[in-house]
Length: 458
Image (cartoon, rainbow, N blue to C red; front, side, top):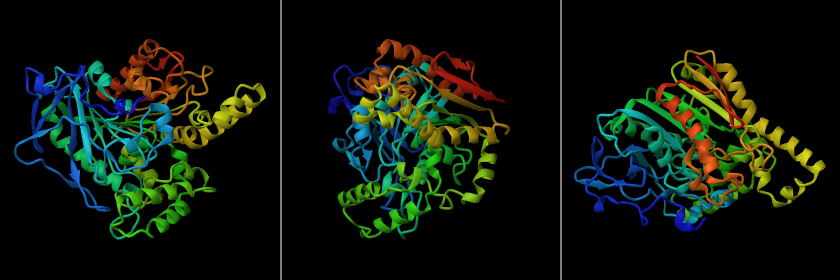
């Protein structure tokens, strides 16, 4: 995938506001925003919702007087490149505009939406192990979901890595990325009605680290009442155990840098920190993560009670893919070669199942069984799409093309060698499940044959 395809931007064939008959203006509490019309949706991109100093908490941002041009993609948060994402989606973060304080959001809404409609709102929180990601990259193009399902999608960005999940201005452990997300949700609550959204019907959805963010926002101080539903896709529950020693070593290494170190030096040190994590159990697979007992999260011994209360008021759809860990083995060309040998293939499959259960499946099942009896409607899915067809079948992130459309993943192994027509036929069914849940908290179909099975309560 060429670099020019990595970000949703002004390209030939897209009708911009300047050339359209109608100027797209939205007057909101935080400012007046000029947007633009894409192929299937209207967009307001790159809206700043907060500002912050390095290692400081976010502060709400207002655009002030005049009209703010929300017609350009948001810069991605400061980060190193991700070889995995480059291979899977062609996204090279090092080639994209970056910003240290990247508290931005972007909005996609159906073309006919008006301020009177009060459409359901889905807030997308991207993943990337809390060290990579961006809201306006092509793999996360939300136009198909918004246009097809009649919902408003807000993509929400937050600080990553050492700048978002390691320290505060005094050098204490911090959850600055979570504080960013809370501030973004407050912006949405205040402003989304002006775009045609219903502030009383907001659903968070996220994948992997984004799912972990959604899970933890359920129990964050300050996030109460800001969303009604949560979709938690492939949350790495297993990496949240045994983190104390890893986090202590990371913070000690990072504190060797002066607080005003150049951003390039911070990213170099972050790369070193992420490389030095052998022997740290499953926590090593995601060195950055929310930290318990650090605002806005409760201490570890209060987590279960906090989630019990949250599940009494928030509808939840959570689940995982049957062969999550296959993604990481599939990226190793030597292991892929071994997969062609019957004996080795059997051994690899056992390893895939063990690691998938340790990191994703067991935690998902335990959370569901522990909290499905609360007052909320709770549903648990298992995705099996592509099993037996590809090393990447039912692997981590394989549902992204179903959710956002095959066209956003041209050439990716996540397509499993299938045609765009095949994928989008299945994807329409998956998107409907997600959108139906966002609209009502209920799910009609409990199975998409060969793709998805859902258990439901309530």
